[in-house]
Amino acid sequence: MDSIDRQILNQLTVNARTSLTDIARTVALSIPAVKRRIDRLERDGVIRGYTTIVEEPGTRKLHAIVELFCTARTERDDVIRVFEGRPEVLIAFSAAGDSDVVMLVQTDGTDHLESFLIDLRRNPHVAQTRSRVMLNTLMGRIPLGQS
Amino acid sequence: MDSIDRQILNQLTVNARTSLTDIARTVALSIPAVKRRIDRLERDGVIRGYTTIVEEPGTRKLHAIVELFCTARTERDDVIRVFEGRPEVLIAFSAAGDSDVVMLVQTDGTDHLESFLIDLRRNPHVAQTRSRVMLNTLMGRIPLGQS
DNA sequence: AATGAAAGATTCACGTG
DNA sequence: CACGTGAATCTTTCATT
Image 1 (tube, rainbow over the protein chains, first blue to last red):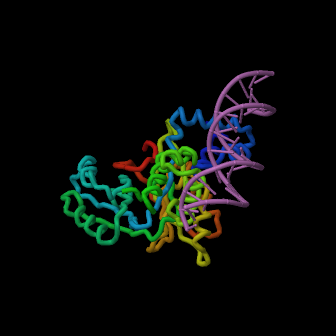
Image 2 (cartoon, chains in turn orange, purple, green, yellow):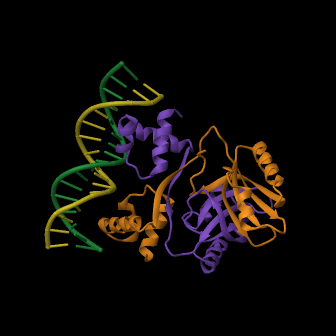
Image 3 (cartoon, each protein chain N blue to C red):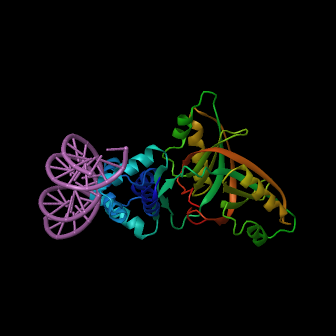
């Protein structure tokens, strides 16, 4: 993993369909050299895969950052159980700061988001929630939108 | 958006580097027909981009929510250009609220995060940043690499 | 790691129902 | 209007140095 590998990865994350020819030009290496590096990165599991970011026109997705404030006697597993089996949650982190959990959720609209929040607050480990609704996706290298 | 479009999207989601030839074979259409459909899906914004899922081995991933406060005369494209080609950014949203942009970033550690933030603030459209470092990944249904 | 030749993939103009 | 055909071009692959 040297700086050339990193350049190759950068270019592939920006556009996974970049040709070897283009990559070779920017890293100033021959095409087979670039190919061997990519093959190695794939074998070593550094490159996990190539994917397409799809936004289906019918289902407009509403994204929000939702934070949880947990009650005093809440364990790690209790928190996980709060959103276990909730497809709305794309990713959830424990965090330092005022709230205990920060998560990125994806809903079909405000009604869906609202009922999701109400459900969360039903859990005895959840003392309070705080949400911030996102307006638009500016960039995403995470595959969203497939339900 | 018919069933053939959906098949094409599925295949590209599984592997963004699938060749037109392969796609044409599975959807039983000619290669130019597939190309025209993909071009249309890209133009219509259904396909938002192609990206690579990278997982660096041995490196502990540090996630953070980074917010941007933009200067007055900042357009949508200016914002996008701020983090274009930055593999640290997993997803970025425009948002209502005090900050203008909310993004989820993934770095190799505090040093990496710090230099990333310094880089961001070098951009004339960025007036201020606010960051919140995540402690642990509690749940993730998106490929982020290990936390 | 580079070269070059062969195989494969992409692009484009044009013709068809 | 979306599809297919075929030729020109570009890209990938692989044996060789």
